[in-house]
Length: 156
Image 1: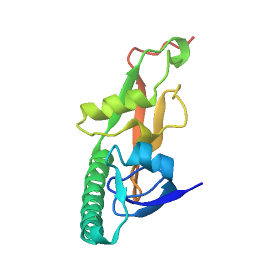
Image 2: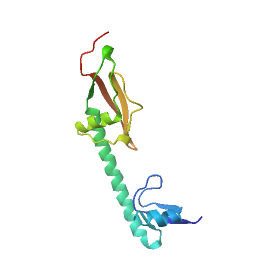
Image 3: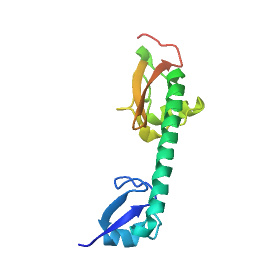
Image 4: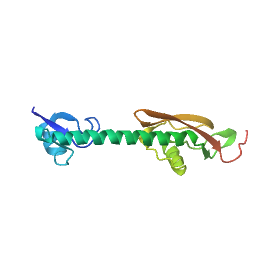
């Protein structure tokens, strides 16, 4: 099995970041990475390109970290309350899912991806709850939210 050394032009999950040199199988390089312009063959002549890619990666990472810290500050200030229909005794009809939280955060002007929210399961009870949002490798914030009844609770 032959391998090829390539210089990555774009970050690829599980393979590396831009500017890194990786060893991949020749077929993967020839059929996937090279035609999609995600990588170029590693040669001595593209040293300046490597340096430029590394500089671009560092500025991108700094920008992403600053953006994540800004979003974390917004999340800490936000008060999220989700109204649900309830039945006798305060039983919740349905459940609060990650999609409901993402939609509610979007209403507050906070952009969060569903993959960043770590809700362990649907919330099926009234009251205060907490979940974590991983905005960046170095930035994780707790999201406190409350599930309230939209109609009066009848005790039966």
